[in-house]
Length: 222
Image: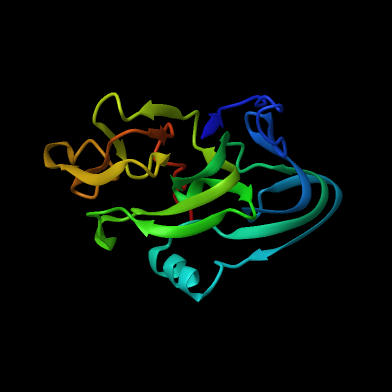
């Protein structure tokens, strides 16, 4: 699996249909179709059509509806240059080579249409824990994620690794993932739920963590 924070990967090493125009904007050389977050298109050159992308079958639709995992998606089809962004957030690209990646569905910006997706639950985390259903993306192709602030890539093989459930953006599917609760830190960590909870990662692989728990919603003034 190859990844980058910004700039272009060596085009002699991997297919070049996904590239970062800059740290906030993705450029897709489209010749067919791609799946992207609804509303992420900021510009395009060429001939393209955009349509709502369903969950991909009744089973996946029910999983997304019951878990609340992911963001609304669209399918872009055509030829030309497509530019995607989301709230000027930082971008990170992965190129999968017949492998899988687990991601927080809310952080997906775009991925190659031929990649396979499914919704999985973190072991040991029930619905009451909140935010612990994630999307698995597999196959060979590109995945683009948006992050709130510049992310950090942690090597979980170096030491036991923990991350806030809302801050963990993506991780290797080879990792063993569980839930770690630290009651003493409840007033300091998380969103004031009364119990501090983090995802615990062990094994060979990486964890991509964004710089916050995500953008906050401004309070209503009326």
